Length: 368
Image (spheres, rainbow, N blue to C red):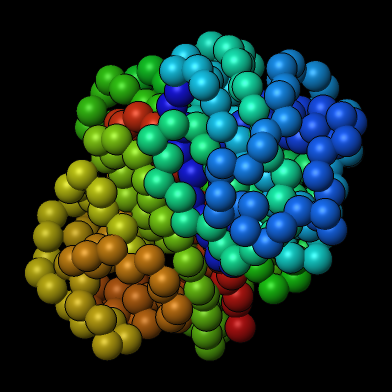
């Protein structure tokens, strides 16, 4: 059996798929050990007597509604068959929004198919489990939760609290693959989301730009902006991933310009996986807000593009975007007094790769 998951913090882990929740439901119905009855060491001791189960796929709602809050479950599969899941299981804890469940990567058929799950153990929750699975053994805390928003349509999006998330497969025709994006949490102070994708072909073509963005009811002149504070915490996993992780800001003389392009484009690359190349030519290294960046300047049709590329990954970027505009104004005559900010976005541009998972644990961007 193949599966991938990692603990996020002391209260959150990834889950391989839906069948575990079904197994939990059946275990509880069969009178499995409750939280108060199990010993504290049960989670760490897989030799504890198991409850024999034959997990069958049922509706998510029925399986998940029966989950017992605060219960730790260890699942062990005796099958070496591969599990295939549609990437629809993404949940969040109401009182601890950083706790997230997710399914495995979407495969080409996007079908749910579980060959066999044979045994389960129910035990009390302890500290975050750190398990390297050779077989399908996973431990997780099962809290109260709600479904996350799933976005699998080409331009499907979701918005709330002044933020929006878009699956945005704008370049999908340049290759083959699929992608789904999930909104894990949106609050007034930020958004958490992730995207799973597989893309091949068109090695030098961007396939998509799944992103989170700040809604801009008014489109201020860049010269009138005093700050663009932002923070992005992210992580990328996958095989042979070629992609960037970047901010994307469009500006235009017309405040009603479409949000899909602009007169100018500012990109701030905080990640470059697989050594992909920005539009334009290198203009050397510049220092912005105490950090070094390689600047690329070029054109995408009629749009002038400025790309500031970090020399290494910045997985926790806490800074201000305005100094990048200041540099463009001072060194390249960017007309800040005539350009309106049209978009303020953060996401990833995939080129090619498999089993790719891009997690944005937190993103916020503000315009002052």
